[in-house]
Image (tube, rainbow, N blue to C red; front, side, top):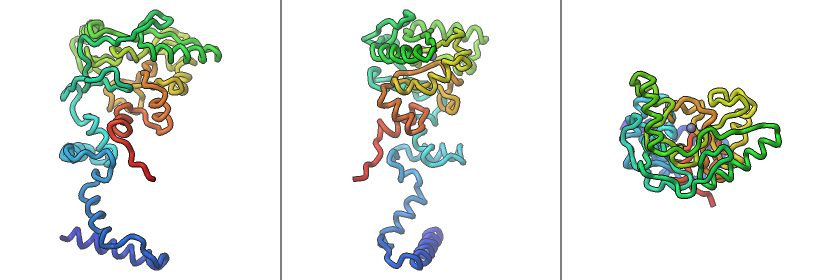
Length: 282
Ligand SMILES: [Zn+2]
């Protein structure tokens, strides 16, 4: 009751002051007060991607991340990022969807193989769309004197299993370390046939960003439908260290929209523009 009274008092004061400058008040006061109270009590509900069944999780995630704005809380929880990595795992039901989320919470079937794998110039396999987009990008890069090389692209679940376990052995069984740079089997984007690891003129993934090709790909790959999937600003969200060499084909529409919106995280884009659509003003 105290809150209601104080909000009412503040609202009345604001209206009293604004009346000095604007004699006509367009919105009826009686309708406004409940709306103000609702947003005060539930800041998440005002967002178009709010999902009522997740409300308790929003509150829990907010409590653990007090400084995070409400919009960040809601999209992250919707994407399942409030769960620990490799918990609450869901099966990817439509692996051919564009784009598709394959991450530490979404797992491909072990026998999933993309239907339309073709060879990149390096001999690595990728889906036809990915290959066509890559060839166009590589041709344009070449016109600027840059040389791209697809060091890795499609990887089967079985190969990923061997890779991951090899890294695990190298790290003395420390999965927490391996998880920062290698996906567990079924959780690798490489199994979708749409991820490519690029080398530039020095021929090493780790050096890629220090070659002229690295920054060029970072700035231009969206024009061809690619995103740099594990960007520096979202390391805690993806759970992977910065991988400037790993690009993912999401189609030109999505990559361009992400570029224009300034969104680097595919999970964020998916929540805000695929799972939900912004309200259109007529
Ligand atoms: Zn990769």
